Length: 285
Image (cartoon, rainbow, N blue to C red):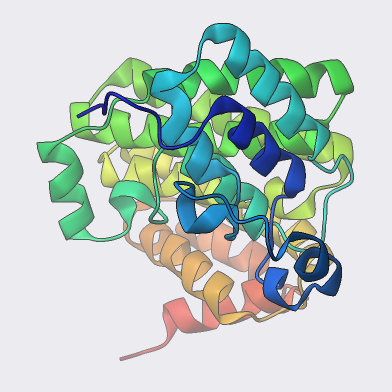
């Protein structure tokens, strides 16, 4: 239900946007602390200081913004966005995810409870998408390929949610296109994480939607791409990525008729993450 009054003013929103897209270290950042300790804004989410700021505040203000105000806000947010991929991506992904009003990760893929809730009440992302279209335009004008890579991955998640809940062939196609665009832009700016993670999420939505042929395709693409690029993003063998790719491997082993050929291609890989993923997936219980 929309309130009669906005939580903050448009001017206050622009001030929050002008601060930064904060990381987990915001409280330890002495420059931020000394300059902004008295600048918390009443009515803003956490006073405007949180990981992924200003995403939450943009979301809560969307019903009150005119199209011109959305354009101004998108332009100022694009000004704060790095064009060179940072070592840590979490705050930028969170910022975009928050603009969709998704304050929990992974959408309906998180667990069965999240899936049931989204089936019961599918969010309306029309205002968020309107804002995102302006943000995409700003990134395109600036040739900010990193920004485009993140925006298209987050859009892929939301399209995946809609595709699975509605069993919508068109939405699945749009989801696939969004994830592929994320990878395409990632290669233009050397955002190594985005060169393989969109394929993983695409695979998982196809798995959830019981589209076996496409799930097999993207499970393979996720592993192939991670084998090539994951070591450029993080050292090998991280638990989170091993868990993800072992899930893809188990799916392929169960569903892909060409599984043995695929396995023999990667069984001697030098990529530690993929090596450990195969070991975990094929470990006898």
